[in-house]
Image (cartoon, rainbow, N blue to C red; front, side, top):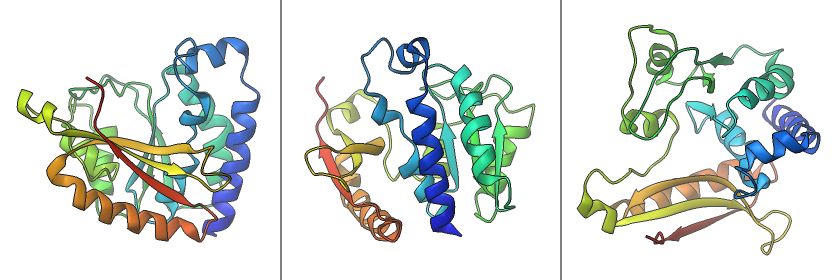
Length: 212
């Protein structure tokens, strides 16, 4: 089932991005400052259905496209299974870095963190979420700087798909981490790389100091 779900997702996602209007393309790339290929979610979806991620978050720069992506890709891929449920955040829930209103959550109901995610999505009294909790439910093994000193020790991490060519890579997930977390990041990467290799993905790890 996993390989079938993954291929169906990859095909529909490719079709989704290939059929964007000029306006949609402009909005999703923030007027061309981003590469559209770095908005692809097939890698994150592969992690989700492989049991690595408790939750997949769809959060495009143009929030209206989150719903379009849900309707055209996610609903079609997941309609005949019961393990994964799709939800739209319909209220203002904020972290230190982002507003989750309008974002789409795909939840693995078999994951031990599913109750935490459901509280976040459905509890109307919940209006904020910590970056630490977000990192847990999205399976990011790093943390954002919590003070000025940690800005100096922050690194940018990316897992890149080099299946087609090492010269033409696609970032499939990216997050911040601290120097002290690099070994944990490397272990996490190796686990992800091994799990998704069965789906035909070849991943490469990139860790670099940000340009401040």
